[in-house]
Amino acid sequence: MSYPVEIMSRVERRRRFGELYNAARRPGPVTEAACWSHGRRKFFVLADVAKAPLAIEAVRRIDAIFAIEREINGLPTAERCAIRRERTAALVTELETWMRAERARLSRHAEVAKAMDYMLKRWPAFTRFLDDGRICLTNNAAERALRGIALGRKAWLFAGSDRGGERAAAMLTLIETAKLSGVDPQAWLADVLRRIADHPASRLHDLLPWRWCQAAHAVPA
Image (cartoon, helix red, strand yellow):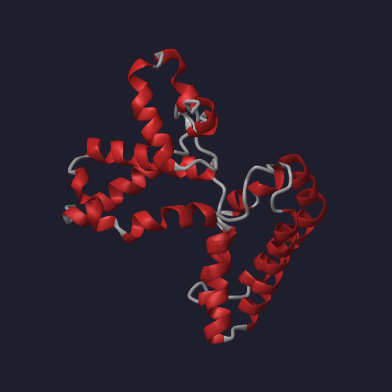
């Protein structure tokens, strides 16, 4: 069977994305952690627009989990993990039990059933945050960082090739990493480009945003 070019490219993208979770991947597979904002959004639309009782109940239960996360946001990872196990795990278990019981009563064509299936089919990924304090409940921060790229996607056609796209992705990753590290990306790039030619290749890691400090290299007046 033949596919149009645009469909083929979509299939290929999905195949490559799936390879990230392949157990044979080196140096190791990526661990999937599903975004609760995405799971909640499907219920929220049904609760807000259709006033569906089951969707309203699902939102209420998920919001209780979000409330705990707001309390522990910014705490050390070990402490976050301990609180999640103590307070959040029971809510997550109750949510799963409730969804599976209600799902069994619904037609597979029901919109609420589809929202439940989205989460239940990915349940291990949705619950992974309970055992790892480093994992955020949502990927909202990552999406906010990428919003500028999405808004300007047509402007990025200058990359012109896969290799150009890979270089652009590497630079954008470093720039966003600088922002997350509290470093001015422009100042960091200007200093690194000025020094990198004479910098030992074995110590390039010293120039990465989280290890770089503009003040340490300032020339005394």
